[in-house]
Image (cartoon, rainbow, N blue to C red; front, side):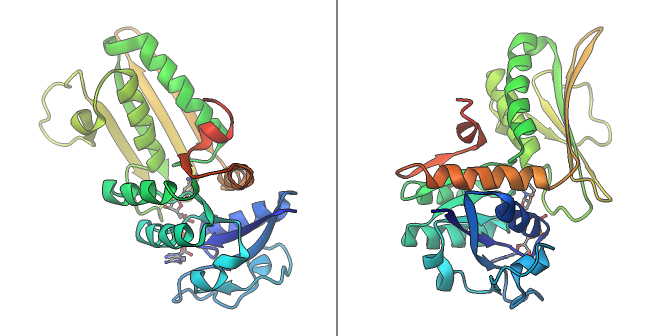
Length: 269
Ligand code: NAD
């Protein structure tokens, strides 16, 4: 029996790519798709919207009405929507794969509460390359230590609404943990004016927004006499959608509640 998949935010940039990835995954079947009532795509066939031909799954605007038709909800929407959807999934016993970024600490705590009731995969980035790069970033920070200044630079398309990206922040958390620091105390978001010399214990973030950049991230380790850079460049949203589809199949095959990320899905822990 294939895993029955619902997609929230189905008409969005990621939503359409997720429809395609679900159709292409042999163990998954798209059974429901929803978006906001104000979306101009309510009533449209999800397959046709994603260039996959007619699938017989119409984009609806009421998640509650279709929760019974899915085993896993894949949600790439907005933080407030994701929290509301997650609470509905917990009530219905539907597992989740969440890709939405920009959640506040309080919203993340809401997701933790949902994950105490159903299985949830929640990752700021579903690409295999980024998941591996988090391991490399951790290793490099532990080897280079406090002698090297660390900075995270990211670039995304002009429509992205949160900054720095969820992936950049996750990289910052990995760096801070490897260096024995708390990111909340040491993060510096952009610099301007008379900043004075660099505080050696900070982790700096720089954000570039424009055009159609799918997602670039570089961590720099800047020492005296050398500089190491670890860079990842996504060239297609399909890389995230494939990771999310793989996560949906994984969480469906796993009993019980809990909060997981791509490292769990890829067996890297
Ligand atoms: P988008 O604006 O193109 O799509 C979001 C969709 O969600 C829209 O169609 C919108 O109408 C819909 N939506 C909003 N509220 C809703 C609700 N209450 N119910 C149902 N649908 C609702 O944005 P996007 O580029 O597809 O990105 C979506 C999110 O995914 C962002 O937070 C982005 O940062 C994140 N993202 C994560 C990854 C990852 O790998 N984790 C990769 C890419 C994007």
